[in-house]
Length: 96
Image (cartoon, rainbow, N blue to C red; front, side):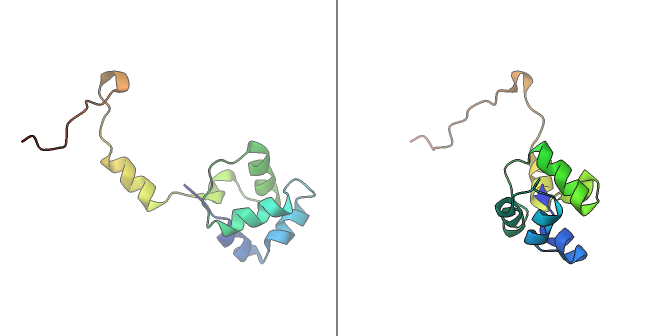
């Protein structure tokens, strides 16, 4: 998943500073800059921040995110999990 902040701000003619100001203190200026500079990569998103972003940008939460092709490709390669969620260990080294 990727947060589409740079595109959304560009579409609205806003900067990270303008986003923070428009939030009325709900989004910290350093947090706004961080969201735009990481090209959408983040570890987690607090629900209060998500709510503030939706309010300021006037979008629904699904408009904030984009599913990256890497994420989709990774999920396609992952097969069904064995019962109990344990994967059998295999020895990859050649025996001599």
